[in-house]
Amino acid sequence: MTFLYTRTNTWGSSPQPDQSMINLWKHITIKSNWRIVQLPNGFLQTEYRNIENQDEWIDVTRRETIAGAEQAIDASIEHYAKKLEFLQGPRVVKTFE
Image (tube, rainbow, N blue to C red):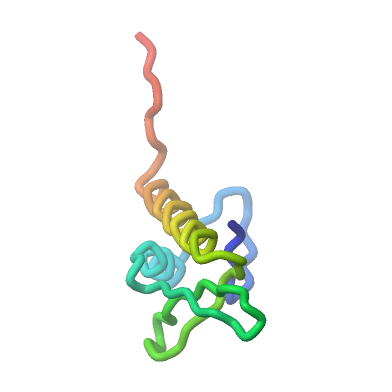
């Protein structure tokens, strides 16, 4: 799933997200900050709650089925959880003796 950023960032080869971006990633990884709404054309739209204005929802994707919409939300949560995990530094996957 492709997540649409609400702002533009320019990063070099080693992106260093600022604290506001990290807070957004943390916010997005909480499933209770998401919802699925049905649009007039029958499609389902996934949205997450705005951090600054809790009454505002930011649309992310559109899907044809509720299962597809929920899968898109779960994929977004997993994606941003991995980004947060890698902020801790590189993960050792194998060592040699």
